[in-house]
Length: 300
Image (cartoon, rainbow, N blue to C red; front, side, top):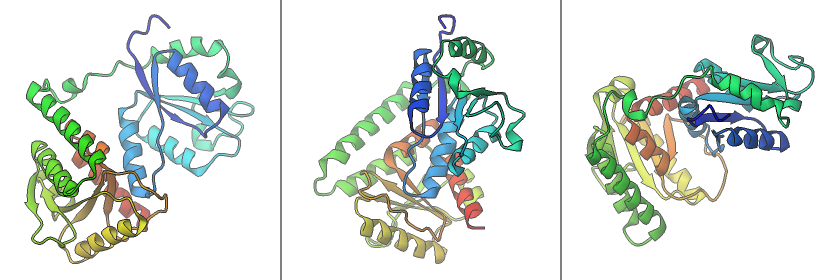
């Protein structure tokens, strides 16, 4: 594999276990950065995160067991829909346990994963994948030192706030995120009152075209189940009253419970680190609208 100088990125679709661990080790040994998704407590965040990670991956590796879980098929279907190259492994005789729509893909046996023969196959497979363009070229611009410094400083500031937990932390976090949205080109309007239910509203020409009314944003530490429900309930009420077209809840502390929150309105719940990634890369509107579209698809 010495001929392949550039590190590729792979999204691994597989159940946890020895086979997925072995494949991950093989990929990493061949200079391939391998990632998977942590399934959070809400379906909308799961869909948004999944689409974002798939879009950034050079190819997909998938291990299909004989008893395939629905989530694996769902993730695989999204990857195929995005046109990602597929490295597919299946248990049992070749193609025996594949769905009809997958039989057109070449499926390797899982026994190949722990053998030296996989290296030769990987080398040939990777030669078919074009090199990824640097992010600055995908936008047609070289990222300015100002912008790079801005996002670096903002991430550092938010990292300190997340661990401080002192008085006024939530207000400082809100102010920091406002600067992030403004840097990314969004127009902001502050909440009309302290207990309004959203800290600020944001819009842009593209966002307005997609969801109509402004997006209501609530920033919260989101660390307790009752707090999470109260935040969602109040934001849902504002959306029913047509105070906004959709909601965004930004969390900056880890959840203490994996209990799912039923969402009766198009509300996206996202960790602050992922939000910063959306803003810095200019993908916020696409990612947010995808999550809102996923809500309506799920509810129908």
